[in-house]
Image (cartoon, rainbow, N blue to C red; front, side, top):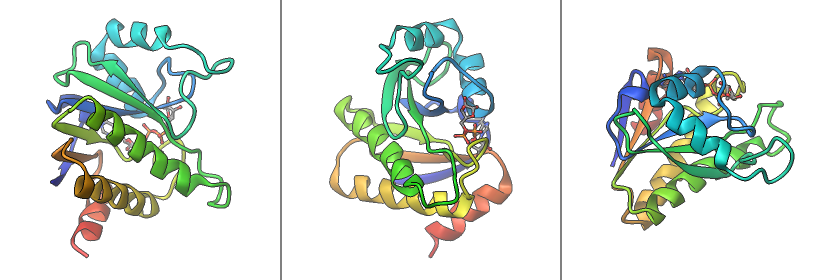
Length: 172
Ligand code: APR
């Protein structure tokens, strides 16, 4: 089932919440900053312990990493790195789709019942919200259709305009 929620993802008690991180995985602004502030040191230490796949890259764009939730209500954080929007001709759509697939695959592998996503890449990374929402909902629907876990996916929007975009697409 897909639910929409308007608010702060750090307050959700789903089994996992997804963080829109960067490749270095040591925190940042936006939802990354909010999740690290709420989770505390345990999350940052777990990020630091992740092996670098290349200098300053612990998670390449499109991939995901399972991490502890620390002080969050959510048991886990699933960090993913979205594409930086460059106009749409550099594979951004596919990288964003991979983010959702990678997070959902981790949730399935770890038999997590519920997962909450922010609108990955639509903030600092500049990905247009409607285009991103269509990719997100397409990938989430496809996963829910074929897999038993998770059974609940919550799309968390931080402002009403984004929430209305998601709702309109869901109701098409
Ligand atoms: N809860 C839910 N959603 C949030 C929250 C929050 N507390 N804070 C921000 N958002 C929303 C934004 O409104 C936006 O819709 O998350 C979406 C993603 O925005 P960003 O957090 O800016 O993430 P992104 O666009 O993927 O850019 C990632 O920004 O913070 C840095 O370290 C991060 O370098 C990385 C880059």
